Image (cartoon, rainbow, N blue to C red):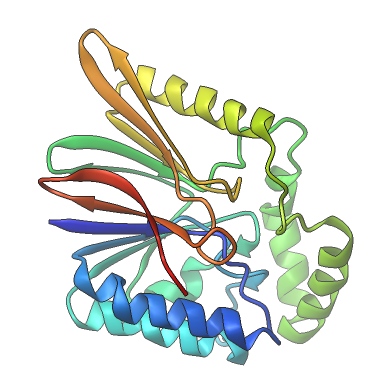
Length: 235
């Protein structure tokens, strides 16, 4: 069995190269796997309007749809740049969407989430509230997009610098989840690929971070007889 995990591309309206990288990655890498996990922030901004899909994202979404049509199981773990994305991806592409996911892979109990939820002073709880969603619905896709892009210029941290203290915080969070009974914890958000093995009661447990498919060219791969590995996608 083979599984692929990737995240943090931050697809943008005018950046055709990012779209090319993702669609090529799906065709060359994801089609070789049975399970595909996208751990959030694939898009720079996405609100899931039920009757509208941002046209500049259609090429990537249709590529993901091709995966499910071929019998692949695709999961999307919503990041901090995506809102109500399940409204679109489930109906249009047959993709299961969640904020967090617990799943068993070859007998291993695996926990997955984008990973920004535990960060101190995180405004995500407010931004992903029914109140904010109602405002987005009222404004509609075009005006919401304009506001999101203006906000992105001020607060988006999609080009995160390498920060060892952030990497350590995510490792600590990963270890805490492992101590809760998971065998593997997989996060994203930092844009820094990472793999740390912990040992508890003679059991080896694993924390991983997908990194950034576009900037660091990193993704994770699992194969039954090889385990989890950080891979580089050479663009």
